[in-house]
Length: 113
Length: 116
Image (cartoon, rainbow over all chains, first blue to last red; front, side, top):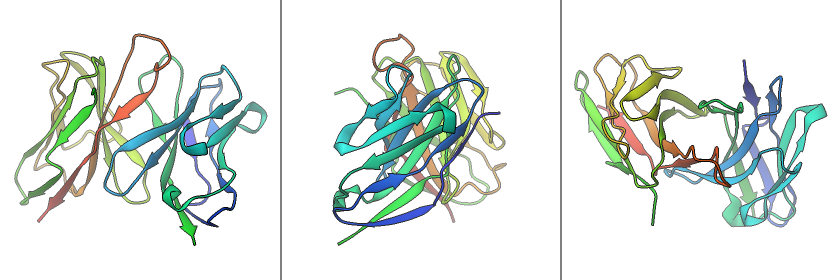
C-alpha cells in the first residue's frame, strides 16, 4: 500500500535560515507527488507538484522540492525563511491512474524572529 | 473566479443530530472529495466521487453519507452514528481532462464542526 512519511511534526527555523521539510513515500512506481501549505483554519493550497517532467520542481513563494527516486524522497526546501512561511505543510502522493490521494501527517513550521 | 466554497465555516451540533456540510465548485471538475482533519493525523478520506451519481467510500466512511446529484455539488451528511464527529472538514475537487493542472486537487476553506 502507498504511504507517505513526514519526519518531524514540528520544525523551527530562524528568519532567513534554510527551510528543510522531509517527505518519504513508498511506492513501487513513481507516483505524482505534491506539497501543500495550510494556514490556520483554512484549506490547503498547492505549493508544487512532481509529475515526472523534472526532478527539481519549483513552486510558489520561493519553495522547491527535489524528487530522488533512489531515496524515495521529495523534500521541500526554501533558502531563506520568512515569517509568513509559518504554517503547516503536507506532503501527498497519488499513484498514477487512480483517484485517491494519500497525505502525510503534516509538519508545522515555526519561524523565529 | 473559479473555486470551491464550503458552508458554513463553523457548525455546532448537539449529540444525536444529523448535520449536512455544503460543498460547491464552479471549476467544472468531475471528481470531488471529502476529508476529515484532526490534529496530528493529516487528512483522512471520507468519500470521493469521480462523476455525477457515483461515489465511493474512503478510509473512514462509517457514520457519514454523501450524494452527487449535480456536478457542482457534493454535500456531506454527518450522522448520529459518527461517534466522534468534532473535526475540521475539507472538500476538494480535481479535474480529469488532462493538461497542466491534471492531478491537482483544489481545496475549499473548510468547515469546523463541533459537537456540544
